[in-house]
Amino acid sequence: MIVKFLGTGSAWQIPEYSCHCRICQTMRQLGELRTRTAIFVQTGQENILIDCGPDIKWQMNTCHIPRPDAVLITHEHGDHYLGLDDLLSFRRSVNAAVWTPIPVYASAETFKQIDLRFGYLFPDTLEKRLVEPGAGLLGLKTSVVPIRTFHGQTATGSLGYVLTEVGPQGRIFRLAYTSDFSKITGQTEFLSQIDLFIIQSNWLHEPLENRPNHMSLQNALEYIKEWRPKRVYLIHISDQDRVTGDPWNELPKKYPAKAPLAHPVTGRPYPVPTCQVEWQSLADQISQDFNLGIPVTVTYDGLTVDSNTI
Ligand SMILES: [Zn+2]
Ligand SMILES: [Zn+2]
Image (cartoon, rainbow, N blue to C red; front, side):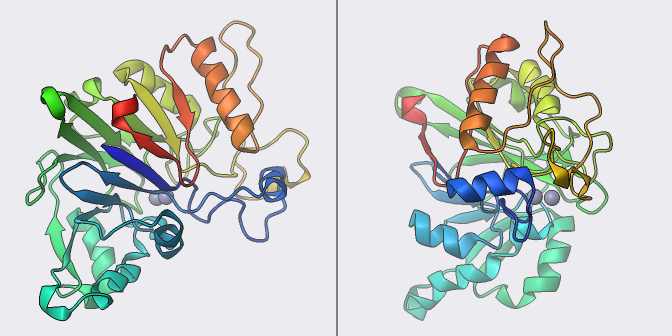
């Protein structure tokens, strides 16, 4: 299984346009960009795109992805489905006689929004496939099971996906992708045998008020300790933590921390990272300080992971 991280940022990309906060300024100076989170998975049997946000055309151009055999949408927020129209490029570039619609999988609640915006894409360009949480997806060679997640009242169709590939010599490789969520409300039995756990880290510190229901690294640590995946990959990183001394901390998107994530022995809060290098060294430090024994990778746009090498 090869996983390409097409985008690794939160809903409006970071650095965010017109934002002068410490995080956005630092990233701009370093030339860093996190586009809207999406991944492309090549299982050996098929190509699966998970989420298709407004940056998908840019991501297709920079990552050179082929036509997906299936698209899995996690939920009905714009940063996760507003790029579906760009998949028309695949149809427009082949002879009509050989075109078959690309299957799109999502929950009934999520399809209510997709239908409103992109009804014209169905059934000729895309094919609608409704997903039932807990039931394996039909029509795919790869085993994919959706898991119900809680992401607030404006995304009641929110799902995570668990992909299982049986490789050479019967080796089983399992990937769990959880996207935007604050709690897992569906079955969790698969989650104790995960090789590659892709989890949102919208904040470092769990905010005082978690609205609209995202995962912080502080909160994710509890899930990581509970399920003990072989490896963790952090996605959907935002600029919403408050950085000490930043005059832009009062922006409404900057959420104060409830009780900052702190070193387990010294009690000293971890500083909020502003760029990729700081994020990765913090993730390494936290993994060590909490004796996780699990490598935690902070993803970046274009990162490719091959399951044979982990
Ligand atoms: Zn999102
Ligand atoms: Zn969302």
